[in-house]
Length: 393
Image (cartoon, rainbow, N blue to C red; front, side, top):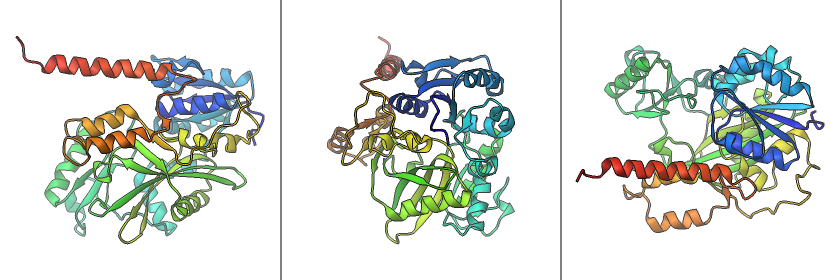
């Protein structure tokens, strides 16, 4: 195991990378951010930055080798783009000498492809929505039970694709054909699955770390916003005691022979109690900071660095961690089709929920610069939008 690691090379610079950088710094590790774009993590004062916007991910492998050569290093990717690069160039990354905190390629390939993941779940008798074999046209499959949910087979967080949303529900063959046509024009392979959105659903994410010896640590959160039908990234989540959800996540990790940090997404039908495995993200997830905030630090567990502490002090464990990504949550609640504007959430309920938050995606007393940079950018965008929409005198 890598209890001697003193440097963490973070592949990625998004909000997740920022949480990883802050956690690594607290543990006494030296974080280094490596990426091809300047995400929010590059504004942190806690890490060394190696950002090369004129390079492709594969072109930065020699840089990773140089970084890893000077000290005992571990390597962790925070985006699917970097995970796919790792799969394609596994031998090259292994040759850098850094300890790769991700599972073997066979497991990664299952997690990175939704169609392959569905087949894997079926083979292992794991509960997951049914997937239909529809490649280009709804007529190719006549036993579809509508509604269905259409998503890209491969996660596309790293780029915006017109006509190919993160997920969209189709209620009839005509809607499905229009949706498939949009995916086809965007050059994206879709996966069509049974839709659960007509049910009263509860959304859970299980943060999980599993060692090569099979030891596992978990933290379970429930997504409070956005609601399931919006198919969006979590903006407000809360820790939750869910033994059955936790057990399912551990069962999945064992079947995958998973080693590393992951997020297991699970839906539960509140009426029937049925659990549905949705996907496994083979990397730290957006709400990664929740684990450390509740004394279940997954990075420390994986590295067996429990004795490390950046300042020698113990963290206070909140009874319930409520994590918020304020800027995203603001859009979900107050946007043009937001929860408040459409009457699905009251202003008073919104204020109460925000007041409960004690873990933040961007804010940190030790590392405030990313928050202020992001806030200033948000204010500028709001002012510019207001200026454009104001009538000309």
